[in-house]
Image (cartoon, rainbow over all chains, first blue to last red; front, side):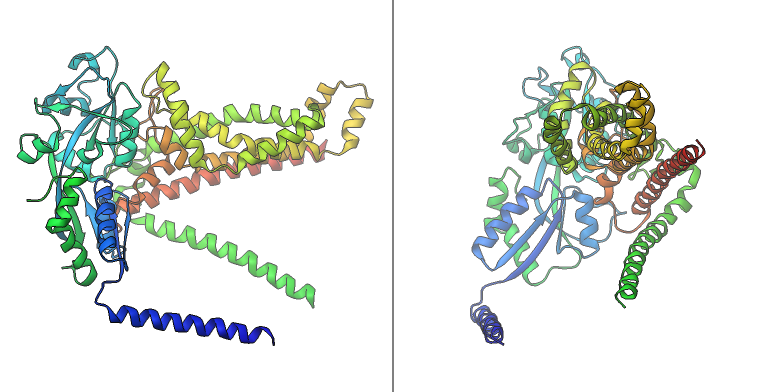
Length: 273
Length: 286
């Protein structure tokens, strides 16, 4: 019997707080709620930065971001598991029909461990390394040692774009080591003096250090990618199942606004315009 | 009254766990059927190429890889594990055992991702020193054997200890040396427990995904040597589970791989049961 009043009190306080909370939410015009985003590991750091900035402006809004690769972004968006999917490649006719919102551009860099004597390759050489024709570094001006090829999993958007832009109809050699994420492939290549891989340009900065090779004599830099001289660039998309409304629309609009695009540039991606 | 109600409770519990198992099996089979039907059992099991982009679904490399790492890990871990169990149960002084035993039991609880991480950071560069990229069958086998070692040691030790004292005393009284007693009396008597430990360990090995993804290279090929890249059924399923479309043949193919993994595990467990039963019969005859 003695417990009862205190329980009641707790209940009443909880209800009062809830009502108060609802009133407060109703009072201001500030946004509140949760937006979920998942997909491309290339887009992930950008989505996080945009989400944080949006959360700072609207503290009652939580933007929940997750990785999983472009394939996951497309399928989870199509199934309604998340509000926004992220993809780092063009959608194919075989993909589900989704609404695309281009967030940024991103270059794909060919990466090696820092200290690798090779500084640049032609697009054809890159293709022949990844299709298994060139297997020794001394064929491309390096030491006499076999090349360890690192790639992403097949559902990766970066791999899809790399396939389209570099490989064409060639298939990637099946002994290539598969790393499932932009982070993991960077870590793997940065630790292998005889490794080569492909990576989102936005991942070139930060630890562990990594070296990007020139392609056809053009350095893999944001400026070259933006001007179009660097040949390997692809769009980054936010995807929605239908035309976005409400909070999702507010967030996407923010990402595409001047303020959002400044965050795109600050994080090493290339703005849409 | 209490008897009857607790009996019902136990029955319900048993039934629930059976029902869950059945539900998982039925669901997996149902999801796998389209792939089996569309690809064809033969092409699925014995195809050499797996590519979701090219709609090729051959899983022989992953089947071979799974068998290779599991058997490889057993070859390394079983002798070491059993010798270690003998040491703990028979040879080591109590104080050494008091330290070693909890340490080994602690190893069982370490999450596989930790083993994978250590393997990736230490083992892969080390193997790379000798040949290839380091991401290799060998790295997978070593990581797996370390992972399953504690299971083998702790269960084997328990079963050696569980051998009745009279066996040991009888053997020693007949003039057998300590070593002869261990080899001829204790080990055969503890055989069923030791086999059970090996099976449990292989069960863990065969289904291990995370640690394998991190060290084995995960390439859809049959390794040319111990230094070559490979992939296993679980590592492949885990790599693609998130990325493939939620409808359609890609996902179905992953479920079909799960069915194959199921069958592999049933074969391992079934063999173990057979060995155990035969061992028991031999024992009761002699």
